[in-house]
Length: 159
Image 1: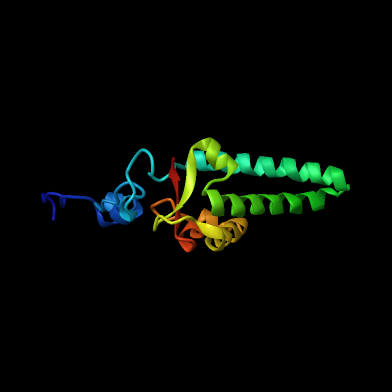
Image 2 (image 1 turned 120 degrees about the vertical axis):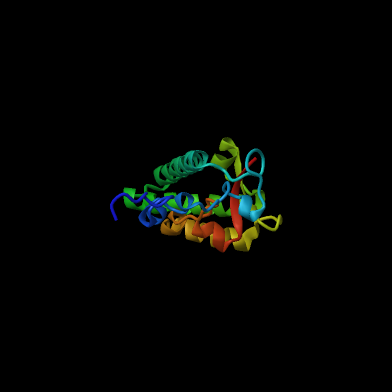
């Protein structure tokens, strides 16, 4: 076998260790598979803006919970549950009716259904409950849609 040329192309281990792109599979930009533009308004929102929006929404929820805790004399453990409840309520109601929360609006992103209709109370509630479980929101597909978005047929897009 000496003197033979090496086989052209990557070794088979290089194709699966490096992911689909190294195997020559064109995945396209996030959102293009579901009919969204690659960039600009209506494109899939990037991770950074989503994370900032989450921190803004959580911070506002903590502020409201602190004000309520001070008014009612609640202990820190109760304040934590109230923060979660305030976050869930504002995420549900604002997403259902406006398609955006305060943090998402400040970051220039919104939640949209794939069929173009408003999110609505039912799908907004399903999305929020899965978001509050935390783990489903961490499992994303190649279109940057978490399990909470997939279950509610939604996607977070740039405004």
